[in-house]
Image 1 (cartoon, helix red, strand yellow):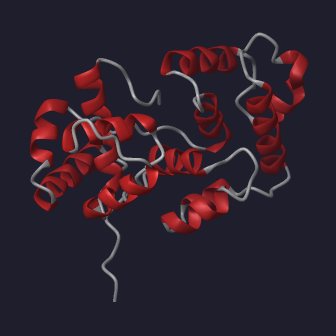
Image 2 (image 1 turned 135 degrees about the vertical axis):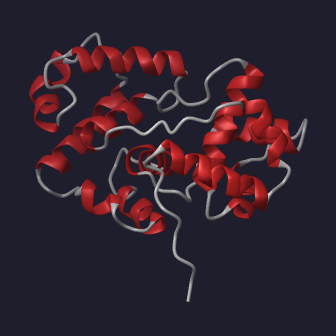
Length: 218
């Protein structure tokens, strides 16, 4: 019988507990944690607003993502499915959404409004099933699904191996001069199960501490 999944990351105390267990699993991470400093929870609300914020961060710098999100959030009801659809392309001019991001968010808002995308039900699923269900919808790729489930649902054993900052951070810490690609990083991160989400939080903080820049803007 498989071991029960660890509790979700819904409190700072749970992050701290998972990090202690993570360092026991892989003692190499003790130095990473010392360099990273405090590792905060960074939980975020879910729903359309949570997805929208993550989509805003796709393929752009943290600073650009933050600016786009602030402009979107400032518009009345823009972070609700109905409000976003009511604004339309004309009402969202000046926010900074690319055509691709606008189309993705429009499709997601329509799916949510029609009941075709049930985020609370998906959030309650095991991680692999939740990722598969989310990525059925246009506009949600693996990275978006993984980030949503980590930050908005507290899934404890997800590692977004396609994230460039994580690839650089793990490379800097464990394989200097060699940055693992997504496939290799998935293999490396297997050693950190079932606490891979806390490992991701740790390496993002390590990235910030060592490179003086944020790796993820949520």
